[in-house]
Length: 334
Ligand code: DC
Image 1 (cartoon, helix red, strand yellow):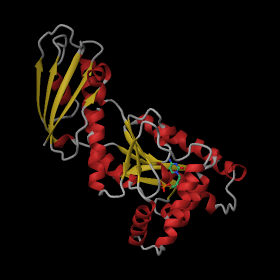
Image 2: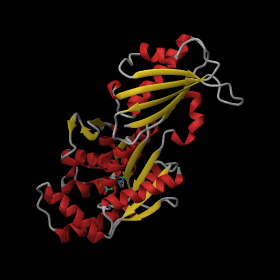
Image 3: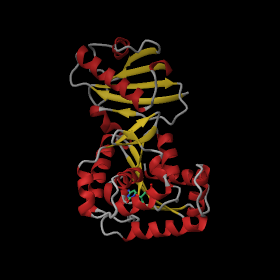
């Protein structure tokens, strides 16, 4: 069982305002913690002494929170405290890490809990996407795999039979690109022209093509715009090559995850053979090094460690160790 904290403010002490604010707060808590109403065991409210027109617990009951035990109390008048404020403490059946929610004027009470982004950059096979997925699940926030977007652009160009990836050939494709990133059961799905290509973009031949096409300005501009929009709407973990240095230079937490190329090749080899692809380890290492070179030498937004990104060399670390290290760095900064 976990305890989730939240608070909000009302603009004036009227029953309508209180109903609206309580409903908004509880819905936001449910959503950000993936909690159903049945999983909330008890909901305890307190409100500042200037709220007298409706008990928040009654507003919650009216909003459909009928299973949990509800309770409201009045806070003492304390000089300097935030006026017209409703606080809540929810006990809920959840194993996930909790997200406390502070809305409206109450956001000022916990500035550390507002929307945040975690940028994980690094070369192929560094382990960043595995860590990014686990990190997003632990924080109960969105994971955006930006590599998948460049892979989808490459797949589109391959499907159109483009031989040469240059601005002139690719720009018309970008102008009519129908690419959507969707989330189902907490998993990212890459949808190109209405078709789910999440598996197809993992094919080894798409990897090199993605590296090539991602060097083009017309491709990057379009992808970066989509990535910034997604990141502006919610807390998320993004992994890629240029997240901390270009897409979100203001990201709250930045990491540069890397590993020796032989280790990275071995990881990709294990991953691809497990999926049934037949690949050659030495060839894979050569391709990975070629991709590193491509991605770091390109002119526009190359793969590079942002000055303020924490370096994580995962060559001799397990995924659990990497995750623990990154979590520790995040907690130190909060
Ligand atoms: O992470 P990945 O292997 O799925 O990425 C495929 C290619 O996409 C990679 O070689 C470089 C490019 N890429 C990029 O340029 N910028 C990003 N933010 C993510 C990927």
